[in-house]
Amino acid sequence: MADERQCDGANDHFKCRYSARGLHRISTLISENAAASQMKMAACELCDADGGEVLFRHPQYRVVRVTGAEGDDYRGFCRVIWNDHVNEMTDLNHDEQTSFMAAVFRVEHALRAALKPDKINLASLGNMTPHLHWHVIPRFRNDKTFPKPIWALAISPLVESDLRPHNRPRHQSIDFNVDWAQCVRQALSNGMPFCA
Image (cartoon, rainbow, N blue to C red; front, side, top):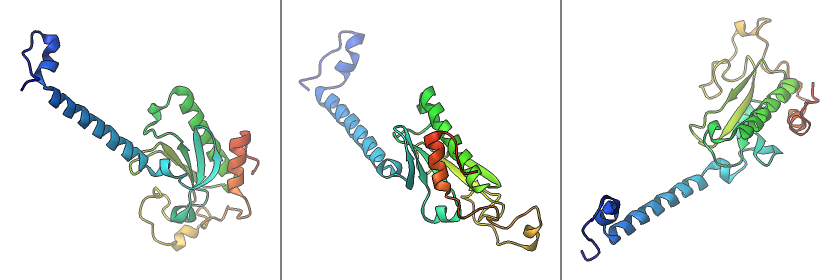
């Protein structure tokens, strides 16, 4: 080929080994891969939509009430979602990590005050949606999957032994008049929930 030449030294090895046409093709492949990566990011459900009903929006993150079947089955289920598309907590700098986790803890505190659950589950998985977010899930002894994770298959209905005094019926402690979502909003705006 006319554009290939002999290499005079090691510094020219890359240039000499590949023709101008070959280098152009490599450059095109790199550009195509970058475009494909951008398309994947653009297809992220947490980049394209809020991911639920927004309860609180911060410049770095948002807190949403989970809607649909998951929200119906697990009262108070929230997600704290980092606004920018990153995969892992270690993609954030120290100050961002601190701010993000403080929001997770404020949501947990507000849900505990408002709903008085038996347990709060905190989870950051991202296996299905690789966009940094935390699940904050109030759990009750007799919810659909307790004591398993909410993503496990539902357990069988209540049996008589579940009704012993130490196993209270599903949602017994919940005051359905409590506006837990407002409690979450207050906790994030003011730093303290007023829903005790």
